[in-house]
Image (cartoon, rainbow, N blue to C red; front, side, top):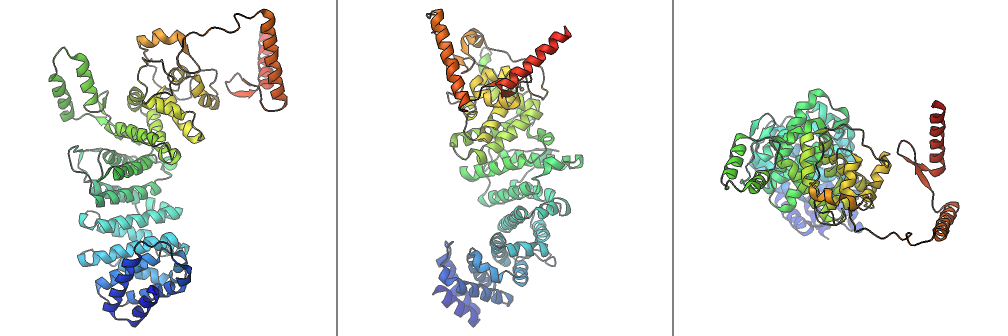
Length: 560
């Protein structure tokens, strides 16, 4: 009945009556996302009628009511099939000020029309393949970039920017060709980066350093939403950047990484919005070439150095340990570098681990990012090693037992999701400079076996990447406990009595043959396959491994 009454009034053509009936329809169906199939034809006709009204010269308030109802109806994919035409798309483009002839955004009264038109376009492009094709034909991406440039530095039109960016994100998500067009033809990378700078009100203190006001107010909800949409669009634009990175792009990627560092150090209006903002920043940082991620850390400013010195000088001279603690914790400092952004990433990672679900989508991006940063940048690796794998003192508990970041990561090394456990193990391995003996010290052989088997390092050794040769120093507590540490479990165990000490030789032989027969039966029934290590450290069936060692021994004998 609602559609029939609205359609009757819309066809009658009186602007005031149309506005009232459509406003009532919009209020009633604002939260409707599923529609009755019996009224499908009526909704199609209502859409067609609304487009005919939008062509006419009607008041702005009536345009807004028409667009609100059109936005609601565009949630139904079936309704869009007959009304998604080039002519109708052009009507919405005109109302959204996306035509090149519209040079400015001066009339504030038109802003609600522009916003509602962009919302309609978002729904229609998302739900209609025909609209997606028409978007290419009408060069919608270029028009959206032009609109962004018009409102780039004007904060009072955040809603326009937000839905412009959302539509740009959808287009770049649905069409790979548009990603390339945005990146190269439309200069989307610097444009979207400038949108982020504007949303964050960044003030540069150096080429890649911005002023951070830790006591400043949080971002407003509108600024936060704009920033999130810009981050998502930038992710699509740069999704393949690590493959095709050119030296000429280094400056732009470094600027973007510096903006993302600023993003990590500010907060949104709520904790959930802050997490969403930082999550999108992490995803985008994963697209930045790793050589450009050095801007995530920066030397301490004179003010920060003076603050450190003042805080330390306030302590009595005999409080040496307290001075060291204050110097370390007052700001996240390592080797004269400000590590705040890295510390935020580490805390973000720990929060995602504590959530206990959606590890592949929520945790692997930040773990992968920290792994690559650690592999490429020594100061970041050493800082993270200090935070995640501090020198061992108490080894009475297994490495996976406890509430420290190390304990949580070691538990992930045996997670059921292969991708999660691989990246968790890889992160710890890189922090240990890809040295097997160092990794086993912190995780135990049992937890690390999967990584070592995949890397061909079950026999020991180190990975392929080069790291500095500085040695880890063990604490006195660890040195004293080391002889009694179980290498498999990685923790201190009291010496256990050997069960075969009290056996006679006949009993030992009987138990040995019993074990051999059990293994033989399992092997013949293919329930168990005996494996051995090849000379290169990889696993292979036992027979093949023995044959290779025989060949090596024969070759060695011939040489002698």
